[in-house]
Amino acid sequence: MKSIIVLGGGTAGLISAITIKQTFPNYSVRVIESDSVGIIGVGEGSTEHWRRWSEYCKIDIRNLVRETDGALKKGIKFENWNGDGKSYFHALSHPFYSYNQAVNSNAFAKTLITDNIKTEDILLETSLVDYGGGLFTVNQYHFNTFKLNAYLHKLCSERKIDVINSTIKEITLTETGDVNYIIAEDDTKYSADLFIDSSGFKRVIATKVGAKWISYKKYLPMNHALAFPTNDITDLKPYTLSRALSSGWNWRISTQGRYGNGYVFDDNFIDATKAHDEVQSFYTEEVKVAKDIKFEAGRVDKLWINNCVSIGLSASFVEPLEASSIGNSILQSFGLCDMLEEWFIDRSIADDYNVKFIACFDNIVDFVQLHYMTKRNDTEFWKTLPERMTKTNFIEHNLELFTKCLPQTHKFSGMYNMFTAPNWAQVMAGLELFDKDFLRDRLLETHGDVKTEQHTIYEDYLANIEKQSYIDHKVLLEQNKLVVKFDRK
Image (cartoon, rainbow, N blue to C red; front, side, top):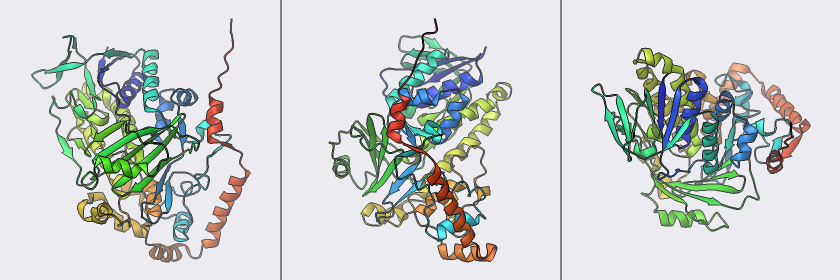
């Protein structure tokens, strides 16, 4: 029987363990964690990959939301990123996404953009949720980080995944560079066929097998975050708020019982004290910082080395924008399970894994950097950002092209890409990056005068919206707390 050890009991480690056990139920899967290591607890939002993962692992969404104080996430509202007080949504929903599958030639998408019609669902600004869809209206959710961790631990227990509380003090290697044992402070030795390093920024195993850190700070200069909860949940919005501030941005994530909040900034332009004072001005409740975190965007040079795979923060980190961390862990776990059986026969598949997930990481970096291509220049941070931030190769070679023809689907062909053409198109529309005159001329050239036809499609969408039944987000979550159990004796 094959044995796998996951080092780290955070979200990434537990997701990895559960995914592997679901895929290979006869494998021995153990999680080793230390109660002296806390949870980072910065991100409480997922991407749409969460729905796919929960269905694959047979997790009941209703129970998950109930036990984690979860809430629905329709998308992300970006506020004042161009410095003009306007906002836009990144949410792959009706009407834009439905008619945007062939985004490079779609007349409907181009008509919305050139006629300044919002590309997102008009219900996003409200707290209304589709009554019929209920909790399944969305593919992504918000969670209380600590309750999510407890819930994932519960799943591990139910699925016979051993969770061991132990602090590792030493890693020993074989002559070929494989991990031989990981040794605890009480001298207990743990061995396995494969080790997953989900020990976070410490990279306890990865550094021992030779993983080297590659910095991406020239592409993403954010390096500091203040995270803090607030208790005022009178306005339980089913979306994440991302508000641009003087030297970065402020997030607000709604869960049942509290908001998760934070300020991500570049501390070359503002220190933690001034950042606290600035973000306080947006809250009536006193801002009490729970975590003060310094970070650097980057990744390890190889995610899979010998019999060690790095997943989660031990492998890479971008920044909290777009909540990509959990989604990336899910994709990595799926990729590992896709290739694991082959690896036991031919270890060269690890090279393929590295290529694919370095590309996955670069795809995330490209998309996050896109958000900083703004017109804002009212502070020293925003004014100097264009000259300080090196454009990624993808943005350097494609952004100008995309402004004139919309993002091209074939440019995002990576198997594990997290963000594709529709994601890019909606953010570019929100940041007003498109050359609308050029798009309008091309639309006339390729499709003729189709404006009336496309507006009719939009009117049909509005009419359909008006026919549906809706429920308030908060009421829906309260209803989900009601559980009826019958005595079957």
